[in-house]
Image (tube, rainbow, N blue to C red; front, side):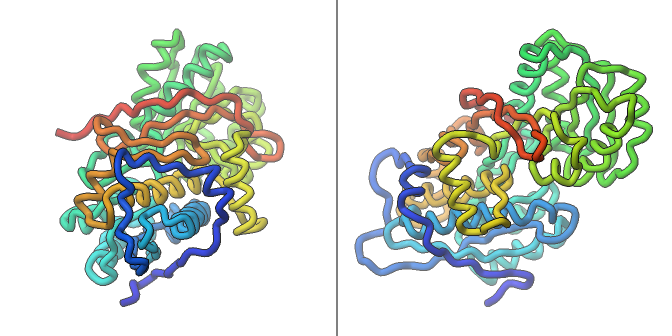
Amino acid sequence: MTVSKSRRWRAGAWGGVLLTALVAAACGGGSGSSGGTGQETVVKVGLVVSLTGNGSSNAEPVIQGANAALDAINSGHLAGSNIKIEFVQVDDATDPKTAQQVCTQLVTQDQVVAIVGSENTPSRAACETAVQPQGLPSFAGNGTGGNVCYSNMFFFGLAPNQQVAPLVDFLTKQQGLKKYYILASDYAPPKGSVAVADKQVPADGGTIIAETYEPLNTTQFSSDVAKIAAAQPDVVLSGLVGNDQIPFHKQLGDDPRTKNLKVASFQMNEAVAKAVGPESVGIYVADDYITGDGSAANKAWIAALQKKYGAKAQPSFFAAETYDAAMYMAAAMKKAGGTDAAKVIGAATGVSIDTERGHVVVKPSSHGYATLAAHIGQVNKDFGIDQISVTPPVDPVVQCPS
């Protein structure tokens, strides 16, 4: 049965050279493939994306990353020698009610064996109310505020400590920026990041001179810019999310009182930088993936995306996180020897993959969050992000609700 608002995506050719360069699944004993009968089994996996609503600007790179992974999984038999994955794509509309509806359809009508998704926190929680009772594994191509824990879900974006501590270390210790003005969205994930900054800035010898929150979908930041100008910080640390970043950075960069300030962001990417324009140049970022990473694996991954999508390729961290989530799902299926939900969930802390972001592993003690390196970068004049440095892999610090 076809899911409302869904499209089905099947794999094409990916290329063995790239597969060899990018993926090495460490299966911890036994091949885990699903038998040797030679008969291929097609299984459905839900792909949950915000095609509409406030999160829609990130949809295309998420879809590209997921489908690039699908190509690699099926051409390389990464989920098992006899398993072929088919995505059933649905739109959560960046809305919890819709998310619950489409995820219920995935489970009850399409009978998917797992979920791969990139959703905001409320929509992901709503989807989980449909998925968790069925015990299905879920692989989230993004992070959280570090305080969301589900026994069946694995996260492939940064927890706050993995991003904020390395960025603050860089700004304070290497750039000598001591006085911080923090402006963030009044929303759980950036609040988690600010909580880490509240500890890390003074630990590194810096001072937070002001901390301000604005509601989601704010477009006028004139009062914030005035406060920043009066405070005269060394650096503005932005935790604004989504499209809220665009008017803020434009207004901050256009004001003669603040145009020369150093700025760092938890959420800046190439698409946002291009939308902001010249005012984005020079902004520092820290994330789990930067397009300007010069590693051979990343160059091969970008080349493959460009071959598949041409000028429309968007190799951002949204694509990379979702790509890795899908690839990790396949590695867990192969280790589990099939798609049995409980076995896949159990296997997910017994595998690791090597991809465009480096070595990715979910440790048994990490509550489903991946250990990841932080990539420090800066927006250049072409609105790309140049990579400055990469940290060693950082374990997530997670505060699970009791």
